[in-house]
Image (cartoon, rainbow, N blue to C red; front, side, top):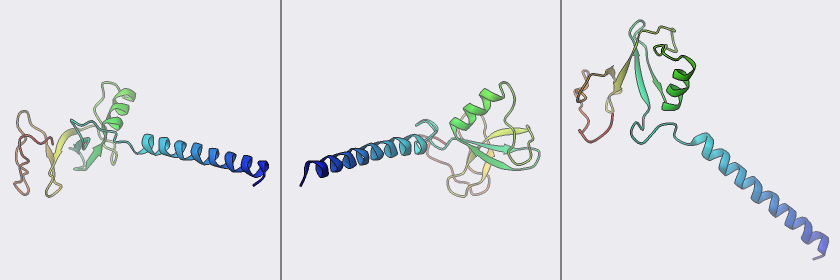
Amino acid sequence: MTDEVKRKLGIAAGVVVVLVFCYSLWAFVLHSNPNSPDVPNGTFWICKTGGHHFHMSLKEYSDYTKAHYGEPVACPTCGSKETVRAYRCEKCGEYYPTVRGEQPPCPKCGYKPPADKPS
């Protein structure tokens, strides 16, 4: 193998290493969980005006409150700001309004998550 071939192989290997590193970094940043361990599923919402329900990651919620400081969260379907925080049932997917204190059972199927499990 000549020195020229060795040099080209070395350059190619270096390029591959840099590309793999860049892809790994991009994948980590793009696909990392935008929620916290305390709220792994993000936030759930119900639109009181249209009956719509929607989900926001903590990053989306943070960005929204930063851009719309002091305003209620707007429904992405109809734009209404008559929205309330909600629970989402792990069993049937029903959305129902949050209440102070312990999470009540789902009004649709009756499922109640264990007390030590975050909603």
